[in-house]
Length: 220
Image (cartoon, rainbow, N blue to C red):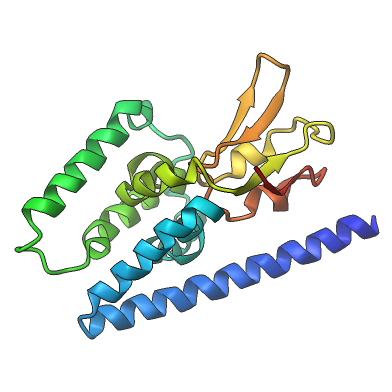
């Protein structure tokens, strides 16, 4: 029992730390945009992209200003009971992610001399609107073009969340709570779960809600 309480305290600290980091990064983002220093933030994103090879999608879960605002919108939408629980099947189509990503790249190339705003500002309203009516996972897993980009190096990340299936109670809470829909089930070996690094946002939500404390960060 003492070990569980100690683990819960650590997770609470991680929650608070993540929130502080997110708010700080949002303030930095707003400040840079206000002084017309978009390139600095783009350099931050580039550095985060390189870090993804080690720590996975740390940028998506801890730094991205869109995600920070989405947390607030997601909370309000649930409180007002206007958010649907299910993601439409059409959004889950594998080809849709790549179509969105290709269109995003083409628009950046063609409109780079016309659009002077940070691309995050352009797609931010769409992300927030989606989150009003659909779970945040709809954006994180299927629609975000930056998420698709960061998912590429995240496949090779050195550190990732691992599930100890010997301790796992197979309750499925981790799957239900994951905002990146990163927890999958291997049915061919019984009810065993694993985390897909390319979709994991490193938000620690799965570890917080796991009753068996079977999920932890591990080296691949």
